[in-house]
Image (cartoon, rainbow, N blue to C red; front, side):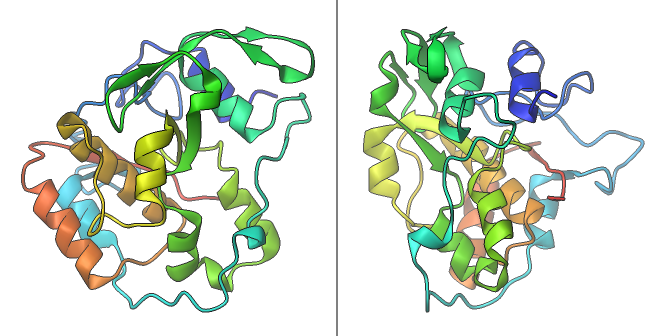
Length: 235
């Protein structure tokens, strides 16, 4: 069975709102989503919401970092046992030019577009696979109450394209565990896409948001005309 990431790789030319291939479009163009919710579901019941409405769906709560350890999220598993772990699956799905795929899922060549800084990267070693909502932020926002299995599922979420992204080392290391009140991508054209991705991940996993975070999201959203958020609740 193909993972959602593999299905995405088979449909690289479809746009975010396309119904023929899920999950939705790639980040390669790094432009604000522009499709409006369909007329058949104006209230977003199908998981597509206007950006401002999506922010309104976030549950506001105080954050708590107590007890967080990165090791409590098991990273880079190979859930489908095809020899490619989560990191490699994301690299394969998001490559602009596909790398050569060797024994043991060794990847050589290829190129990627890092949408955080709008740069092309031709060496996979110079890419991080970023959790759009960082592990520590997820912990603060509800994951501290999850089982270890649930945290592993979150850390390796290939079921939604907007949760994990391949990006340049620099901006990702600068971001760290910051939320949108503390950090935004350096590429100006990335901001609307980034907050849509952030909100989609939080809604997918039913994570909360604090007051400063919501204020920052609303501030950015004011400049994102007609942007939408598409998400599917995590199983």
